[in-house]
Image (cartoon, rainbow, N blue to C red):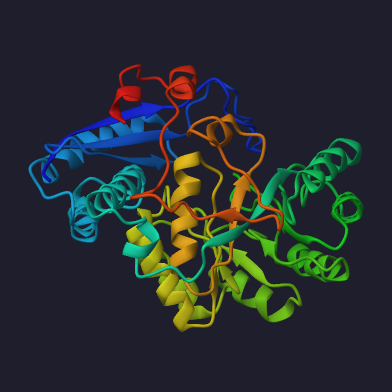
Length: 378
């Protein structure tokens, strides 16, 4: 099974808001699918949390190292791309594109062997995973109505994030968390400050005070409380906080995570498989985290392909029992045949078919994809 060519397909028309100060519009392309074709006719699909222009340019650079290679050696090929990217800027768009390629290669390996990806990643510790509904903060009536509806749908875990949190005053912060807690009851509730936003104003003193407040509301973890590169700040915050501290969604490649893990900066580390290097890299980060007593819960503000990859990752890591589910996104709910369905316990089954175990929905892909020929890929 040799690699013959690689396609890209951006998604537009239903891009959800991101909570950013320069807010996303529906036609903004921030998610890109990648198809890796082989001479056997098998096609693997991956997803990158990056614009199509950047992914396509990166693929032009990376493809010569892939064409003609065996598609059954995901870890070796991905590591080769990482090792060879130094001259064009590893860690950025090249790594983001590599993430999608890596996911597609694991998909191909699973198809070839007739096995789900999670089993190939080392074995399945679980057959289903609890998704937490990821919701942007908003004025209390809007946010609580959304959260209450999600409770009714069967979700049992939630995360609220961004908006005005840490950007107005402490009263707004607490009122927002109090409203969310009332809406979800005793269910798991996490809070994401969105510290990776440009010029995020929250500093260490604010984060410490806020962690104390969040502890009073039984918050499961405090995410991105500081600027993403502030290792020393995260270490001090973790020492202070009664609430678990999480972060790492903007970091790429395991080499960026190791200093945070070594310093004891996080209780929970959150690589994004569609940005950080793919399943191969997330698995390595998960192993390193586990050796240090740190949980991995993947960041997953992405697509149905990214969600499928995260479910397989969660099945293969002993301590990863949650995945992020971006609610209300057509790129998750309408992109694969059959969509996603919670069971009676609020869990998602890990796909059991070969590879990622999902099939692209042709109608959804034609509706939102920038490449009309991409729907014929699989």
